[in-house]
Amino acid sequence: MRAILLAGTVGLLVSLFGTPLYIRFLVHRGYGQFIRDDGPTSHHTKRGTPTMGGAVLILATVLGYLVAHLATLNPVSASAVLVLGLMLGLGAVGFVDDFTKISKQRSLGLRSGPKLLGQAGVAIVFALLALQFPDANGFTPASTAVSFTRDTVVDFFQVGSVVGSVLFVVWALLMVAGTSNGVNLTDGLDGLATGATAFVAGAYLLIGLWQSNQSCGVTGFTARCYETRDPRDLAVVAAALLGACIGFLWWNASPAKIFMGDTGSLALGGALAGLAITTRTELLLVVLGGLFAIITLSVIIQVGSFKLTRRRVFRMAPLQHHFELVGWAEVTIVTRFWIVASLFVGLGLGIFYSEWLVGNDL
Image 1 (cartoon, helix red, strand yellow):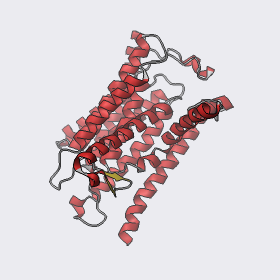
Image 2 (cartoon, rainbow, N blue to C red):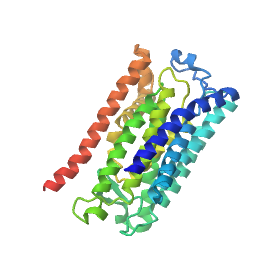
Image 3 (cartoon, rainbow, N blue to C red):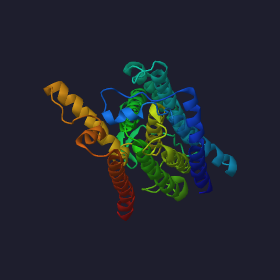
Image 4 (cartoon, rainbow, N blue to C red):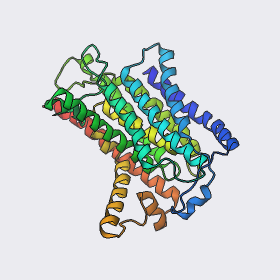
């Protein structure tokens, strides 16, 4: 528990006090955000706001994790290192995208092809490594079975080890790409994606703690124990991520002094996807991150409707911009979306605990 508290505290302090220093650096270099001409007109006043703030989020999370381990002298775990590596890799892809926008003085960064290729490359490396490094019980950071609150009976290895490994890599790629792009689409209003991510990170902190207390290595191989490799250390990662988000939110809340950019949104999405895969809660992430799923779905509906009927369902997609054009104030949208995000997190945690509770009552 001391490592978890330390990770959260260090992540919070580094993000809270490091962000204003980073803002000064970005302002001095003239690294400001460019705004889409086809976006809401109210966003034009945000032109020039420092961006690439996700670098602070990544640094705060990694330092929070490392300091916690240095202070407690606990060894790092394969699962946590892989999640942080996924976060760093996707953050690097986002950084290139953000820097392209700044250097070329335009609101569009990398083309969709190179951007997706970069995300895919990072996700594939993560997926391949996640099936390695078994512990004393034979548990690897990831499992080839599709998981909800734990591994289900659907296992990719049922069709053979080689084909199963390929299917798992494809599955992990879809999860990483879907989650990172979902957070990226949500990052359209001051503090929206940061706050929503903090809720989900808090959920994974609790999940990691519960899985640690009910792990097969602690309770024995009972029917309802959790076969996760490093649940307690994944809780440390989640705590560092939570603290980093809260500290950054101080400066990112409306009116934002800095934007996280794709550097942050892709990194945060990658961290959440990595936590879901390594805690064996892949499909539960759809519930915990319900706000991200809804916003992503709004874009799919908008694009699909326009291509099929030449009509738009929403005034603008993603969904938060629709409500802007309806007339809602930005702070109102963010606050109400945070409420929605918290409700989804509560529902997800309820499902997670109920599955264990019902299973132990059988």
